[in-house]
Length: 204
Image: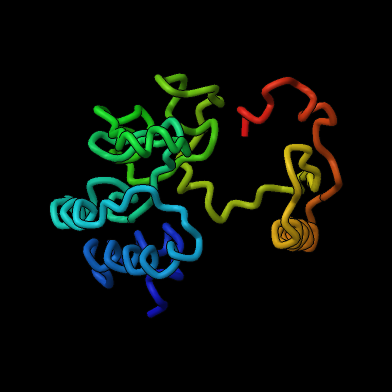
């Protein structure tokens, strides 16, 4: 069996459903990865490891498609009750601010066990949604493996808010090359005025 930390959410959920991996083993693997990588990446402002293990022990198997799959919550407008809520602010960190409530998206994540994409926070406009997309015609899990047709994909290698790291550019180019190799139409394309609006950094 592959290393748990190398599995994506779909494979890990399937392994858990089959009994190959327990929720506690999945969370323990995630904790090990956090402890190993965070000293280098410095991405975790709150380490709720004991609480995560308690959640894993208490969870009802099969209660949601991704209920047993561990995930991270971004500390930027999506607080969890009782956890740090610094939003990258040193003053808030010095004050030890903690959120009194779950953000709506966090409530939905706990119910589904899945971190949604932008525009897919919930089934339609809900508290905390900056915008929404039309409801899908079928479940996302049913979309997996379906041929999307030839997509038109725009690539942006420009960031007027700061310098782009070479590794980031290389990653974008690698994905663009992969998509082009799969038959999609890939070109350099993005809204030319996306950095012109005052305060545009707030959208990223």
